[in-house]
Amino acid sequence: MRTRGSKLAIVVLAVLRPPAAAGHDLPINRTMNAFVRVEPSRLDLVVRVPLDLLRSVPFPLSGQEYDLAAAGPATRQALAALAQSLPIWEGGTRLVPESARGRLTLPSDRSFLDYDQAAAHVAEPVEDGTRIWFEQGFLDAHFTYPISSPASVFSLRTTVAPDLKDFARLSVRYLPLEGTSRAFLITGGSGRVPLNPAWWQAASGFVVLGVEHILSGLDHLLFLLCLVLPFRRVRPLVPVITAFTLAHSFALVGSAYGLAPTGDWFPPFVETAIAASIVYMALENVVGARLGHRWIVAGLFGVVHGFGFSYGLQERLQLAGSHLLVSLFTFNVGIELGQLLVLAVAVPALALLRRAVPERAGVVVASALVAHTGWHWMLDRWQALARVEWPRLDAGSALLVAKWAAGLAAAGVVARLLARWADRGAAVAAPEGRTHP
Image 1 (cartoon, rainbow, N blue to C red):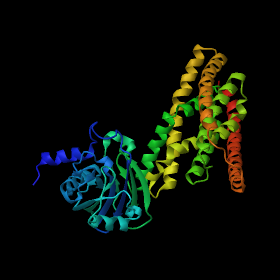
Image 2 (cartoon, rainbow, N blue to C red):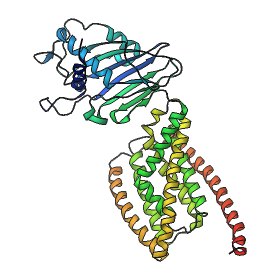
Image 3 (cartoon, rainbow, N blue to C red):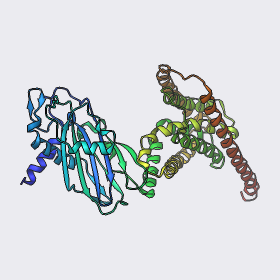
Image 4 (tube, helix red, strand yellow):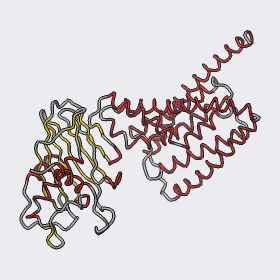
């Protein structure tokens, strides 16, 4: 029986990459493939790990090939390490595998196209005469875990090759007992990922994601600053912020449902347009804007920023499980909370600034500085955009443009109605202000 210290040494040995004596610094194949299938009383994890990620496991060699006949002890060491570095939880309880089996596999094998083939392949012995070159094959493993209920929330984490961080990826196909399967792409930086999250788990995670996204997006923050800079009161800001919110929400939902334009040209186009929106808004502040119509500009540019928000959401939508609409809504809620937090700080700070600096001069200087930053961003992003091929306008593209135009028109009508409501409220409040100075 192994001692506790020897087990720990095995885990460390298998999950860490080897020293500089290896043939190359970074593994060529850094993607693991796995299936997680839930049965009434058990959960199965079938995983394929490139041997390139397990360089420190002492698989025996015969020249430049693996000695498959003598690979049993090293395979058991690797299985023990994988059980530690691919932990699975049922609710808050970490599961312990009741069985584990594994084998080495040729790089040409295609059995991991579906779960049944993969599980059957792991159960088969290596064929006589098989030759696998050093670091060119896979370790295929099958773990079985007893569970309390197939309706539990299961979560998974990967710490295989932790020094590679997000470069080592785990592609997972989750197969629940009931419902549709889902695909995940998990890295070491993903943390513990719920495979079938409850709606409240998805909601809370996406609220936090939305707040983090807006607070970490400097270009979005500069646009918001330029948007509110000339306003002295909060009430006229309501239709402006509302138009921006409706527009970016509209674009965000459309992107999540696959209605955004596709192609290599679109992401750099959006990034360039976001920078251009900052420059335009800043220059409008410098020359003097008609603030009563700013909601229109905010709405148009809100669509562009919504597409930008969608890029921060795309990779994380896989974590929504079956709660796509809830996740989209709460991500938007997080963005709005982040915006309100920014405005709660910016509006009082601008009011204090106006007391120390002449109002018009402060707006011009601040906007000029922002315009300078946005201009350099726009030039840099334009260079990236100029290197991609633009799409040809066909019937499908024209239909897509028509759908977005109709949607924008509808959003514009809603924003206009809200603007009129705000104007009526201001007109009613004005006499009261004169009566009660």
